[in-house]
Length: 407
Image (cartoon, rainbow, N blue to C red; front, side):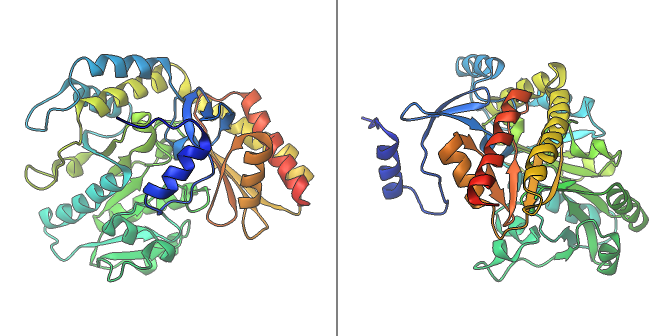
């Protein structure tokens, strides 16, 4: 019989005993969620501005998602890619009809989707007469996953350490510095991979000039431009894809996180010749594109596109940054270095070594969940259905935490 735990303390005690210790967890066992709120095992209520790290785009237990899960439980959860399934076709159709892409290849996570892009780029080069091309240029402070190839693609030594020798074929340029990309370009490069907004790297939006410059450079060299939109796609930035804010179209783009509303799914979106590269036998997955994950993805996209969720993300992101400037930056001018973001991925960089003391006080004193990334950047990636009242609660919590710290 499965043991039922009664309290937060019991879950934490048993978790520390049985769970592998590769995550640093807050002393909180989340029992259920509703909208932008979660509740712990003891019944306490928290405003969730972590959102499963940008996963719960529609909030917790959205009625459309609940209905989809109930229906799917009574039909079929898995078949295989030896067959077609309707939800996979529906999801791909929604993506293609609302983007520049022609085809969609499914995966099970963001890291898998980025692996798919890397493999696609290398095969594309060989298919087009350049077997010597295998190098992918990525950016410093980027994040592309935890598999061996994607952690190597990630431009952070902290992610590389312990795992040498790393796979060959990756070089790192400065984000938002086109010349640094050109400086390491040569005949061995097959693609450039970047996030339109760096998430784990401290919520850093790309400049228009940088993304357009990358597009022009890739066109000049005959190589692929690939975007990682695992964290910033699926409506997060006020558009379905972050690159749509810039009017710059990549050859391929990864999706994951919010795409499945909590059920693991990833996707590689491709256009033009890049949409013809991965042929039968070159790439695939047992679970990718399964009917459960794709039914949830299709439902998620339908609600985001047709129920005003993406537009709400744009409006609430603007409101968040306005309030952050007018309250947090005004009250703590020596502490706040910069406020930046796009849609509802927002960051407050501090003139402190770490933002974790603010995170801890927001949790302890205000029942508000936020997180700290890239050392000293407070990151806010809430459900895209949040409202002004909920944003005001978070702004107040951060302001009060900084005041209490004497910042």
